Length: 254
Image 1: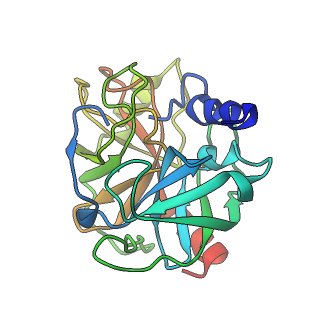
Image 2: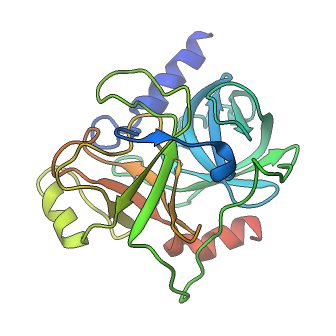
């Protein structure tokens, strides 16, 4: 692996230096056929972040996952679909376009969202398909969300999971969430908060950019940031997708 690729890999895993650790701890194995929208966002052929299929040519991830590749994303990034095993199987796609939110802020991950176009197109099958997108003004079940990813499965142990993991998390009251992070990090109006007050189960490094999906298969959020992994009073923060629905449509046509 080149020095540049190594450097960018470190940037992906530490791009938010503390607050935005690419944050599944306490999860279980899941087959890709149950979550066919799940993607591995790869750098130099190795998993770096999660992502999700939203259309036959388009995927979605966190802005901070994509930002580290601004030097030459079209050479460094590839996308793997249709596999439960990290860095193996499925189909690998190149990307032809990356669009970061125009108001993405690296210092506090405001507007932490990006979309990307793949080639060849995703081939829809039992193991590859799009997640549903929320529509403004149309309610859906968001009391619980399911996260998926290949991120660290033991807190502070830099070993990603070979098999795809999932975990269901309850939605938390935003006032409580803001209180949990008071004096530490800024919880933004574009964030939505999911997790357990007691900790023990959470997303972790390598899960950033991955989808948080409702029980009725609607994309609630994109894994964004949090304090550590599975710590008490440190729930995960996710970019709330419905707030960016018009932006997604404008950039992708979906």
